Length: 227
Ligand code: ADP
Ligand code: ADP
Image (tube, rainbow, N blue to C red; front, top):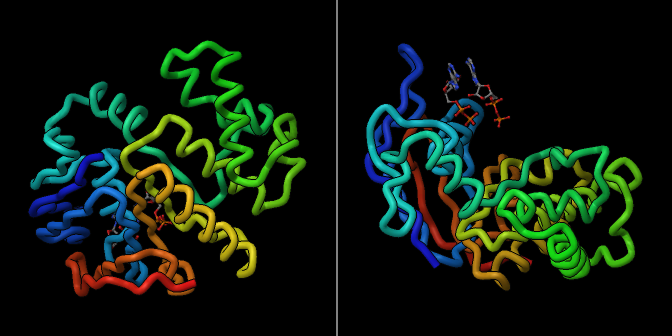
């Protein structure tokens, strides 16, 4: 269980300031929603926190590891091993079954195929997808596919799961179901959850809300978890 902490993150694109001295500490097990108007810096913050993008200055710490100071291949490895990702459209591999998609992070970590597939099946079960192991993403509903993506983001027991508009491609009822299960399984497995969304209906499933405006943290408050 590791704290994710950023200090004084700065990122500019030419004349545009995308992050201006953003400091943020996210405790293990917290679920944090990041909201803000379009262009305020949410994606940039998510990408810097998750090690996809290097800031101009400032530091991201995972526990006592300086993520920003790592060399590229070490940073990729930390992302693969310690972080999980859920995107708007799932980004599942169409040619692979649900179980194979979920097993993918374990195969990358060197697990044997049979063991990885067994573990993947257990996660599919937890996500309410028993019996769907051999379905391809194209043979599932949007909500089911997103639950497969959630299983894949957690199967290797990451410290932090980053979700970028995870319900953006779903209708509202399905989006609620997906947020409920995402927050529940992250909490069960002790993973910190960071969700970028423009939708308060999505954010309210989290226990903390950070609002970004004009590249700075405009507001940071606890939420009574809203079911
Ligand atoms: P949000 O996710 O809140 O919409 P972004 O982090 O995508 O905000 O963008 C913050 C600001 O940085 C915006 O003004 C955006 O146009 C700019 N920006 C983001 N990425 C790039 C890039 N690769 N090149 C140039 N400008 C960028
Ligand atoms: P999201 O849908 O996650 O908010 P965006 O639409 O903000 O993502 O950005 C998608 C990609 O385009 C990102 O990699 C971002 O860095 C880049 N980008 C955003 N704004 C600009 C811009 N003004 N110029 C160039 N690239 C940009």
